[in-house]
Length: 175
Ligand code: GDP
Ligand code: MG
Image 1 (cartoon, rainbow, N blue to C red):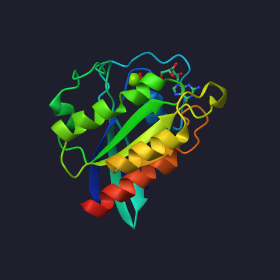
Image 2 (cartoon, rainbow, N blue to C red):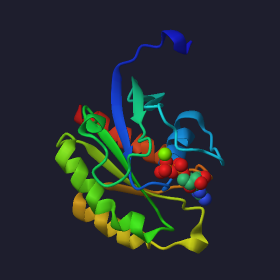
Image 3 (tube, helix red, strand yellow):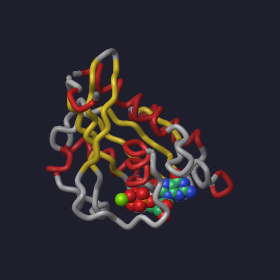
Image 4 (cartoon, rainbow, N blue to C red):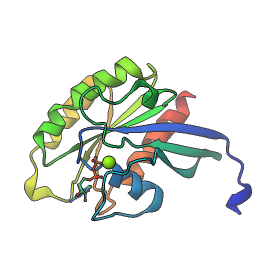
């Protein structure tokens, strides 16, 4: 049973991006396969975990969530300390949240480890009719900056697991 499961690695992953892009819901989809329609910004819960197996190694992903500190430069360097991976989330229906992605990359370059693996996520892909960020813009930015990229939906669950597994696989290959 999983109680006695041997953990080979613990990977810290941080989730960042503007307020209301869906960071908490992406995390809850990945760790609990849940989406909460009336979620409040959670105060006090620092991280959630999910244990997965990659190449026969048991990896405990410890995924950190911001609790309303998304204002520019309000996330402290302690949040980034020891992080091996980052999920940088924007909302495909909010152009501003994509325009701010460059700032979040700067934050990571300033505070996180040089080798941190970054996955850019265009969330709320279920809201196609409200799209404000063309996929190609994000693909181009990600290529420029050396980020992995996927659109996803915390609501439908589309691509959430795939994106996390990809990030964790890439992280695994650099430890
Ligand atoms: P955070 O501030 O980045 O943590 O954002 P939340 O996870 O709290 O989500 C902000 C709002 O967006 C909430 O009203 C969520 O219900 C909604 N939301 C989050 N993810 C999705 C998604 O994939 N699709 C849609 N349609 N709404 C979403
Ligand atoms: Mg949140």
